[in-house]
Length: 271
Image (cartoon, rainbow, N blue to C red; front, top):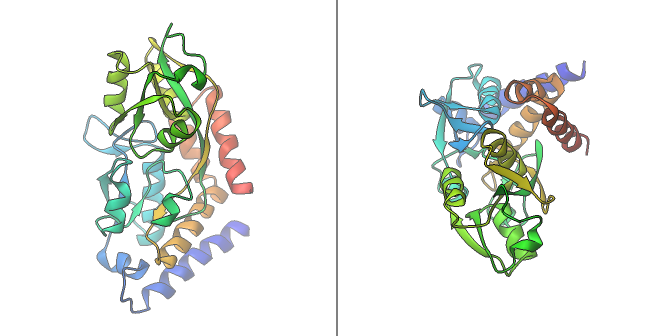
């Protein structure tokens, strides 16, 4: 019954908003356009990446398709735009995309420029290093070059906790991995989800140290577009209540780390 009521809420919200004339870009405008334009990452497997067929795929991509299905009854009525942490907010505020769904941590600094959906995941920041690097914690980074991605919570947290570390800021994760291998930095600070993936598929790399920052992920939405936020919030809740959000995660992950990621989903939806 609870799932049914949530589903009804989604439908009522769609039809009521679609019938209201809109001056600014609202959910009704998105519906009338026939598609939703979403900014996603292109280099963050298995969360969001471009495969060998030049198609976007990953856990967040699945969730985007489900959102389009709730909105239009068709999961394909969606346009993906590749974004990086450096440019994603600019693309949103300039109107080039409708929402951001790109492993985006909810922070007070970002909330000054946009609003967020309810959280759908929790992430922490860890260090990725070459095996035998001698790096065991963030405090070993003082005075050393550390690779980060510009505009990420990892870069911000590192600057606050280890101001003596010299950040080598890049814009793409594949560039960061290559820079690490080329010894441009002693470690790469990034979401633990990503560094665990890289360590899994690259035997010369390893995850070192403990978490030094924890952030909830949310969907980025333009300020003032409260109807879009309500819809995304209800859609996320429906994905969680129906089990779709968890089932999709199982499709992309396995092993012991899956249990930890499922625990994080439960945590943010129960808070």
